[in-house]
Image (cartoon, rainbow, N blue to C red; front, side):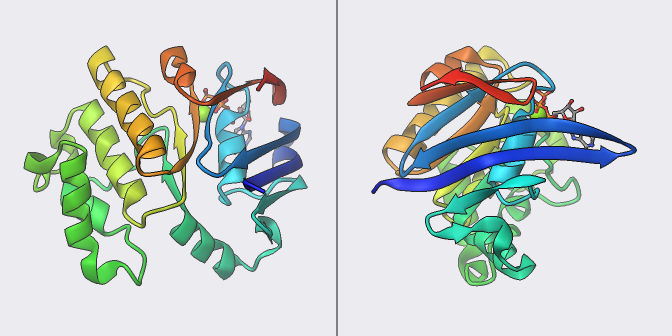
Length: 223
Ligand SMILES: Nc1ncnc2c1ncn2[C@@H]1O[C@H](COP(=O)(O)OP(=O)(O)OP(=O)(O)O)[C@@H](O)[C@H]1O
Ligand SMILES: [Mg+2]
């Protein structure tokens, strides 16, 4: 069987004062080298779903399996080790560390085992992403598209099997959007990464192997 992840009937209720159900009873599966786009309006629950799938946010009900592992049955340290080794995240708002250089932002994300070679790996990735000449500058000196590419390099530093990306082309011009879309295609086809991304950008979603639509916390349609 080629299945990599299984999301089993997950519901997430946020409880900050009043209870709010952000996602309701969502089930889906992801196979190896899949490229899945999740599309839906603002507030639909896309980021919540991505965080639950990536081991960042426990669901209120339901389960998430990675191969045989039940993510939220693992101990905290096991789950963070799994996240560190297996998945890479590209967040909606980059989350780069402003006080560190581009190179340091990427290298510092390396896991303990990878730390010895992290600067070498970070340089290779920045070259791959076309940022070879921006390694020594700080995030504030970058354009939005360049920041996003640094965030992608950082997500790749531990050579993750799965890449979770939240609006990776949000706030970018057409040219940067196309560059990033091409990059994901290459990561999926050539580097054999499994990609799960959330986007409003239908051009980006269309190049994925599958599109799922989410609305008011529920899966609507998709293949
Ligand atoms: N920590 C939280 N506490 C309470 N409610 C939350 C929390 N995080 C998200 N929500 C609510 O859950 C719903 C889904 O949020 P989510 O961030 O998953 O949406 P989204 O589809 O990613 O939207 P966008 O496209 O704007 O990023 C929203 O109505 C939001 O207000
Ligand atoms: Mg979001």
